[in-house]
Length: 118
Image (cartoon, rainbow, N blue to C red; front, side, top):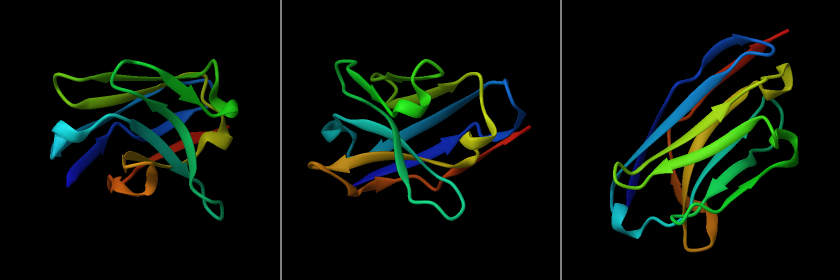
C-alpha cells in the first residue's frame, strides 16, 4: 500500500503559477508510474499528467505547454508545475499511483484545491 500526501494548492489569478508536490510513503519500492488527476465541480475526474520512473511523460491536451510533471525518485516525490493558469484549471488536484494498470484501483492522495480567478 502506498500513502500519498499532496501540498501546494491555493488561489491564484489567471496567468499565474503554482507548484504542487506529492510525497509517497509505504510500499514505495513498487512505484513506477506517478500521476496527477483533477476534478472540477460537476465534472468527472480526469488525468492531467503522468510520469514513469525513467522520466517519460504524458499530458492532457488541455495542459500541454503550460504544465510540467517531474519526479525525484530518491525522495519518492512527484511535482506538477503549473504555469499560465486559466480559470478552467480550477479543480481539486489528486496525486495517484496506479495498481497494476488501473489508476482507479490505485492509491490516491487527499487532494489539494487549486482555484484560478479571472
